[in-house]
Image 1 (cartoon, rainbow, N blue to C red):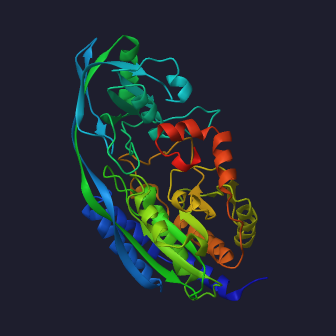
Image 2: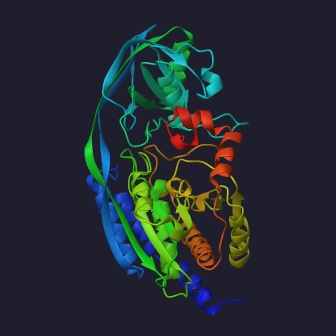
Length: 440
């Protein structure tokens, strides 16, 4: 049935400039790297936006965090030519060097690509891409195989044009084992050729990991009930760019959803939270999950990737009931929502999913495979579109409102584990050091 109050709230959202203002303010911060001053500024900025949206009990909180700071790095081919290349140290890379090490190209860096390869003492080259016919292979997985094989260093090369070295954390919340850097597709092409010619390199990284803290922000809407829906997005970003798409758009979408829901009747408490340190190991969301009773959380909506491109994509992470709710939301809004039942552990839903909380991730249908502009210097505000922020914010609001009144089944841990095993995730999660110890 039509709901005039909802219709009016959605109509106001079409004219709302606040989501774009929030994205702009986040993109203007110098550095939202986990544990750096910009991350705290981002949390304060979101707290102000939530208060302006009518949320109550708005606050920022801190959590312990190993803070990584990038220093200089260098990469030079020493054989068969003498040639230096630009490179970017990867977060949680330890300081260290590999001098005169042989190059070993492992392509996509899958378990099969490493199988039978002797990479001991070598600097491994791995692409950001994944095989077309297989699942997405995460960077931490490719790095983990290199470490397990005794490699002396790791080079992660982009598969997209544009002289864009990629970045991304090597481990969840701890310093990694061997020095690692990102290089552009163009540099990767040269290094692969030199690897075929028996090439050697000097690789050196200067970086520091010290004890510090990160910051979360949160506030609530709706009645005070014994259960709640948690809406979460990460406000931290890598220090190489503005972090507009990853995940400034997600934060702006969350704020847009809060502004739609403010003043509407809700059947349960809705907690809006943005968290830090997602990019270096889901540490802000882990702290948030630990602060809540999982039995009181009806569902988690993880807004990581929404607002970037035109069509909303939802990952249901093993909870089939979400598909029906999302279909109803799409029908109500007359907008498409692409639904997939894929499960993965590499975003802020994971700490909640591990505690038996049903979790859906809102992303976007992206052009091509991989992260696109994300995790590179090209992740800038000009790639974003205010229309997408508003529309995804409205869809997120409708989803949250439905979840506040409709129960969805809680995931079964055994089923979740079996799904990840069946989809081939276990070896990679073990290599990435994220397979739960209590699942062995």
